[in-house]
Image (cartoon, rainbow, N blue to C red; front, side):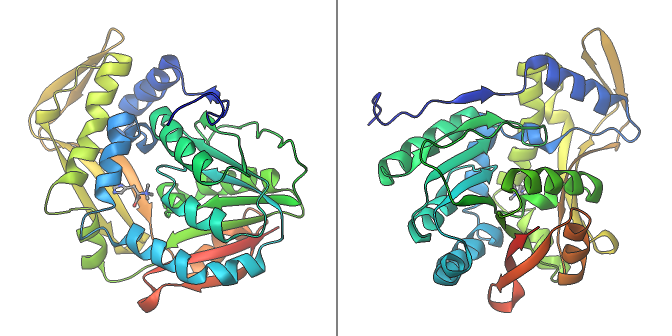
Length: 322
Ligand code: AVJ
């Protein structure tokens, strides 16, 4: 039930149409062309992502939820008491529910999420389930500096929660600056709980991004529909196809939209030509080893203090500290 008492105030810093247009023009002017995966998450994109997490090939969410559930007592013991939990890219909040239920006396919860609809729906459910935890939702692109609200009741420290291997969507340089801003958010006594997908056989990884039902393809192509609506591009989604390949040398999935014909796209009085077969880069999903993850977080002044792996090392949770 929606009512004034359970609806927490929203800090709304959603990217403006100008932000999205600027990024789109920059990406279409690059060689090779690229668009940012953060714009996948409009209302429909967030809904399609939820459907991806239920596809049999997409092991990540299922495995991480089971790992979080199984490790929760150990996680609660390793996390300092009375935390303010700040989650980056909170999505539907299924993992949050397990975390908030398992931690010792969480004081407040700040989800930072670019999809306003996903944020409002999840925080409304969480507010009902956890009436004693102050909800401080922020709609924002977390790759930009985000002011984190201050809870009414003093928290012992800040716990950054960054599950889903969302870190994997960032190149090493972008991941480093994001981890640095998380380190600032958590403060000297803070901690971060990060979910990472681990390097495994290429076929398993590739299948996860090429589900038989075609949900991932629809998710990728929705980016074009979204940009047509929000910044006035005139992409013809049926002139592109989803392509996701695991590149072992770079330990990542590279997702592209491939033009299936010679065509032109116009936006803001400018024209961009696509050749038949031209690939536009839209998403990376990096997979990690202990060594590559250690090296990455070290660049941001962080270290692993606890680690939990799913059976068969399918997925990992890492507790980090400055
Ligand atoms: C949002 C990082 C969890 O990269 O695996 C799923 C997004 N893209 N299928 C990922 C995604 C295509 C996903 N995460």
